[in-house]
Image 1 (cartoon, rainbow, N blue to C red):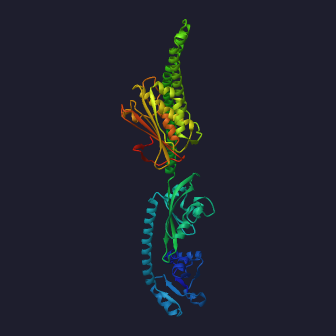
Image 2 (image 1 turned 90 degrees about the vertical axis):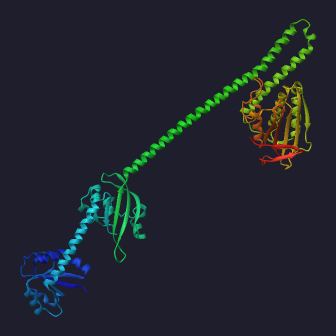
Image 3 (image 1 turned 45 degrees about the vertical axis):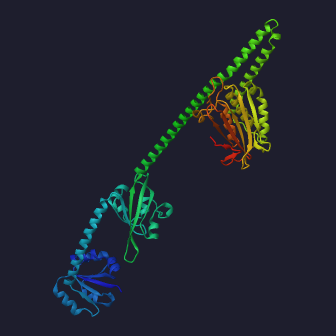
Length: 524
């Protein structure tokens, strides 16, 4: 039930009451409303304000006794003590009366509370205006009810330009709501989850440019659990964002520039390394090839001179035969040097097939028969007749055997000859075979073992080798998924053992002992 109130007396007190207690305030908060004012003076301040508010105005309060006026309560605002007695003597029984003294006491308490609330409001407003972040207070339907000075200054608005408008009208200059998650506004998330939310979004600044904002929205709750207000705090971090992007761009440029410099430096170093290797190779090749060519040339000149001598040819048949043999040896040495260089520089595709290792060894020994005789090297063959075939390239495997035999011959030549033992057998796991070349030459020092398979490294005398033979051997064996090792002692000769798998797949590392002969192989 709504209580209808009439104020008796239209002076300043009445005006103050009407200003402080509007119809909407009373109706919303206490289910009461002021509907009439009684005063004989039509120019009284309270009467004039009541007229503007559309309230019923009468000169005599007794006119309000009429039940049609539906008045429930008289509030006396005139301090005249006789007025109370007159009203009490004449009023209907249904009408209630609040005396001036009682209402004045209530009003003073109300005013003190109002003053306290006003002070608190001013304090809060001072705090809000002292915060440099942008602060808005708005209702759940996005109507702005408060804004701090930082917001007004940043956006270039006056307070009256903001209060009562929608937040999207102020921020985005649009009449369409933007609280959807698609646009990044956290309002919908706050209402759904009933808790504060934060996001980063873009807004149009007062200069019309896009600004980056860190936005957080905090709800304020009523006693019944509903959201009464929402406080939005925004922080402009556009300058920091642009600086971070600029720093990232500069860093990327520096990385790109440094990468380019490193690539250029790497390319130059590779080129220099290639040129140095090419120069070393060229110098070695010149020495290696020039020596046998000079020998052949000298022998040719000697033979021509002998032919010019009368009867020289018949008398010197034996020296001619020896000269021709030497020319053949030097020519073969040139051929080996060139073959090693071609094998080292080219990575040609291997033609794989089933290979009989024993047969390849026999063929290689025949090709090197003259070299072995010259070096006074005898061959001791211990070839396993039941040796299975392997998958590989016949040409390349024969190239390995050629290098092994020629190296052994040169190693024993310095001791006036020796015996080269060539042995083959099958490992006990039956998944690989071993080939051993054992000589009793000068052997290899411990200091040279680590560099044995490096390109251009040689222990031979100047003009005797370019240092590619064992490098070629190592490359071919690795291409066949095999392994090689050497067992040597200075002055006691050397044994090179090669392991080749029976199938193209790479075998596991093994230590094999067959007939008390160890085949311990490791990839270098």
